[in-house]
Length: 127
Image (cartoon, rainbow, N blue to C red; front, side, top):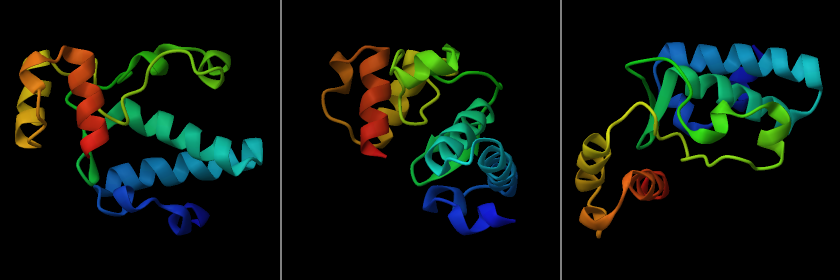
């Protein structure tokens, strides 16, 4: 598959199902749109419904679905930058306590004063 040559390093360290999902969507999106950047955005959007970024790889989510406010928007709204994204962190799929535990494991300072969005942002920035 042509998508294998374009796999980001985080996906190269991820489970086979994550790589296959990304590759299949990327190949179809490149054929459909012809725009490489748009194809990669599409592939990541699909990937983020079943996987979340955990450090240097993508791990399966407990429940499929949108991971952040931007994922719930229409394509046009996403292009306009509406809705916040948290760099692959599953904001909707985790409680504040779960995000806090991840922040603690990543040794993020100031985490005790952060709300759920701030924790998700900090985790995305750190990983």
